[in-house]
Length: 88
Image 1 (cartoon, helix red, strand yellow):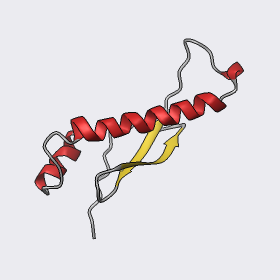
Image 2 (cartoon, helix red, strand yellow):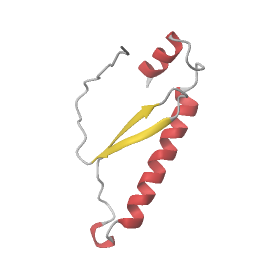
Image 3 (cartoon, helix red, strand yellow):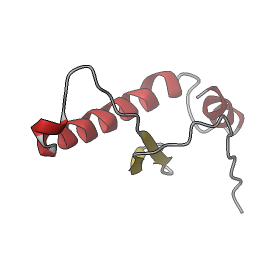
Protein backbone atom coordinates (compact mmCIF):
# COMPACT_ATOMS: atom_id res chain seq x y z
CA UNK A 1 0.00 0.00 0.00
CA UNK A 2 2.89 2.34 0.70
CA UNK A 3 4.22 1.74 -2.80
CA UNK A 4 0.84 2.57 -4.32
CA UNK A 5 0.65 5.82 -2.35
CA UNK A 6 4.22 6.69 -3.30
CA UNK A 7 3.46 6.09 -6.99
CA UNK A 8 0.33 8.25 -6.83
CA UNK A 9 2.22 11.01 -5.01
CA UNK A 10 5.16 10.93 -7.43
CA UNK A 11 2.85 11.31 -10.42
CA UNK A 12 0.52 13.84 -8.78
CA UNK A 13 -2.47 11.54 -9.17
CA UNK A 14 -4.01 11.64 -5.69
CA UNK A 15 -3.98 13.27 -2.28
CA UNK A 16 -1.32 12.09 0.17
CA UNK A 17 -3.94 10.18 2.19
CA UNK A 18 -5.76 8.54 -0.73
CA UNK A 19 -4.67 4.98 0.07
CA UNK A 20 -5.34 5.16 3.81
CA UNK A 21 -8.76 6.71 3.30
CA UNK A 22 -10.54 6.41 -0.06
CA UNK A 23 -8.78 3.31 -1.42
CA UNK A 24 -9.09 1.22 1.75
CA UNK A 25 -12.76 2.17 2.06
CA UNK A 26 -13.36 0.98 -1.51
CA UNK A 27 -11.54 -2.28 -0.74
CA UNK A 28 -13.59 -2.80 2.43
CA UNK A 29 -16.81 -2.25 0.48
CA UNK A 30 -15.80 -4.64 -2.31
CA UNK A 31 -14.73 -7.34 0.15
CA UNK A 32 -17.87 -6.95 2.26
CA UNK A 33 -20.17 -7.28 -0.76
CA UNK A 34 -18.20 -10.27 -2.02
CA UNK A 35 -18.31 -12.11 1.31
CA UNK A 36 -22.01 -11.38 1.78
CA UNK A 37 -22.76 -12.74 -1.70
CA UNK A 38 -20.73 -15.86 -0.91
CA UNK A 39 -22.38 -16.31 2.51
CA UNK A 40 -25.86 -16.16 1.04
CA UNK A 41 -25.05 -18.83 -1.54
CA UNK A 42 -22.78 -21.10 0.56
CA UNK A 43 -24.22 -24.44 1.63
CA UNK A 44 -24.70 -24.03 5.38
CA UNK A 45 -23.44 -27.56 6.04
CA UNK A 46 -20.01 -26.53 4.69
CA UNK A 47 -19.68 -23.53 7.04
CA UNK A 48 -18.45 -24.27 10.55
CA UNK A 49 -17.39 -22.01 13.39
CA UNK A 50 -13.66 -22.04 13.99
CA UNK A 51 -12.79 -22.65 10.36
CA UNK A 52 -11.52 -20.15 7.85
CA UNK A 53 -10.63 -19.94 4.21
CA UNK A 54 -7.80 -17.88 2.81
CA UNK A 55 -8.67 -16.02 -0.39
CA UNK A 56 -6.91 -13.40 -2.49
CA UNK A 57 -8.60 -10.41 -4.09
CA UNK A 58 -7.30 -9.02 -7.39
CA UNK A 59 -8.27 -5.39 -7.87
CA UNK A 60 -7.56 -2.76 -10.49
CA UNK A 61 -7.77 1.02 -10.32
CA UNK A 62 -9.36 2.90 -13.20
CA UNK A 63 -8.36 6.36 -14.42
CA UNK A 64 -10.64 7.91 -11.77
CA UNK A 65 -8.93 5.91 -8.99
CA UNK A 66 -11.99 3.73 -8.48
CA UNK A 67 -11.18 0.17 -7.40
CA UNK A 68 -12.77 -2.71 -9.30
CA UNK A 69 -12.75 -6.40 -8.46
CA UNK A 70 -11.13 -8.57 -11.11
CA UNK A 71 -11.33 -11.94 -9.37
CA UNK A 72 -11.17 -13.75 -6.06
CA UNK A 73 -8.58 -16.52 -5.84
CA UNK A 74 -9.32 -19.57 -3.71
CA UNK A 75 -5.61 -20.44 -3.71
CA UNK A 76 -3.77 -17.12 -3.54
CA UNK A 77 -0.01 -16.86 -3.88
CA UNK A 78 1.64 -16.27 -0.54
CA UNK A 79 4.98 -15.20 -2.00
CA UNK A 80 6.32 -11.78 -1.18
CA UNK A 81 7.00 -11.01 -4.83
CA UNK A 82 5.61 -7.75 -6.12
CA UNK A 83 4.93 -7.31 -9.81
CA UNK A 84 5.32 -3.80 -11.08
CA UNK A 85 3.83 -2.84 -14.40
CA UNK A 86 4.80 0.15 -16.46
CA UNK A 87 2.58 1.89 -18.93
CA UNK A 88 3.59 1.73 -22.61
